[in-house]
Image (cartoon, rainbow, N blue to C red; front, side, top):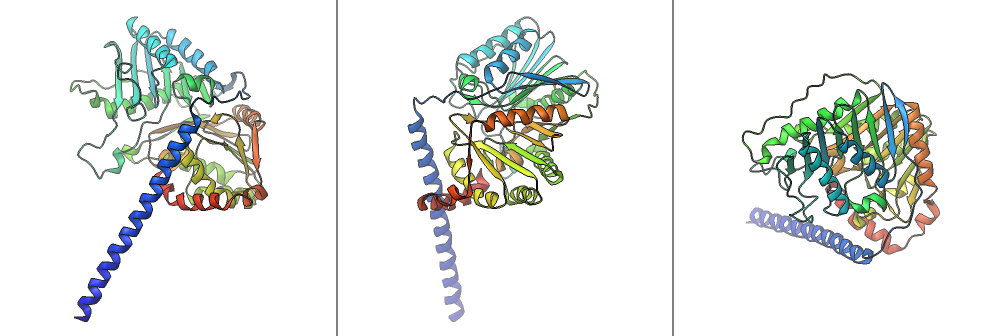
Amino acid sequence: MGRRAIERGGLGLSRLLRRVLLTVLGVQVGLAVTMSLVDSYRRRGKKPKPFPTREPETVAVGDGEVTTYTFGRDLYDDMIAAIDGAERQILFETYIWKGDATGERFKRALAAAADRGVEVYCIYDGFANLVVSPSFKRFPTSMKVLRYPVYAAGWRFFDLRRYGRDHRKILVVDDHTGFIGGYNIGSAYETEWRDTHVRVTGPAVWDLKRAFADFWNLNRRRRLRASERPLLLETASTWEPSIRFQRNVPRLWVFPIRGMYLEAINRASRNIWLTQAYFLPDQDFVDALKDASRRGVDVRLLLPLKSNHIVADWISRGYFTQLLDAGVRVLRFRDAMVHAKTATVDGTWCTVGTANIDRLSLQGNYEINLEAIDQELAKQLEEIFLVDQSNCLELTSEEWEARDLHRKFTEAFLSPLRPLL
């Protein structure tokens, strides 16, 4: 009887612990949802203030060129010009494609290209565009459009490889021009958000084409046509030693972007300048930045003062104490959302792409980043960083330690949600 009583007591304790844990998780999620709703209400009708940008600038990299963009209108004008000048093929992929004036502009340009005989392939993420009008998502039959589904696992409920979102932003025109970076398609991004994108020409464009084709072929049957033919590339592969495109492909369990960052950080001897929209790394990533700072590297982390995801902001702040204590400079971009995902190391290595430093981007979603070893491009991105820094408030250790007790409690209470973001 004693043993049975102990076993019953153990089962009761186990049930109690499960209930407590589920209750705490429910409160955490409820608080996160409430914070998001309140923040959305407060933002209604508010417009971001102007922020400093740079004109598009082009540098030679290897056998091609790279042009950087820091203002959406400049980028969109050049993307539309490339689409209008297409002669044979357009490959267009985006995470968000708003049904507003800017979204319509792109839709019309792509449809016009298809009407004049250009092969037009488009991919957009179904979940990211749930709030977009269904009428906008009706495309001419002359365009080949793949809507990456909201739920992609099918009957494979427990296959984690099938839950990643398509977070990539790619445009490739013919064999000569490619675009990649953080910009989604929409009117707000055109003038109100600070982001970074690049245009690439030369041999590296082929790798961008292959990245698009691989995703299309992996998911082409989602167009509900059994006879859908694969997208075959006619251009021969040419190695461009200065540029690589690193791709996270959850379906294949391939996630090189995190390793790319850690390798560059661990090799740094002079400076590491990171610009990130959302900063929710794992502890190994934080430790790499701290170690770099402690060995004398100038480590700067530029983030939005207030992003469009308030919960991510609160959880991100949980890392600030250890980063500041290690000497990392935390810079907060004022008055507008900075959505760029860029980094430079030692004035030589740099990256621009779609991956945020968070679990979803580094270990969950389809992402793509340009990685370059080129001093001129790195110098250009450092100059962009300094322009952004001029619009930042730097967080000091004294300011951080003096924050209110309720802020400290909220940051600690929400920290268990990090693995979900």
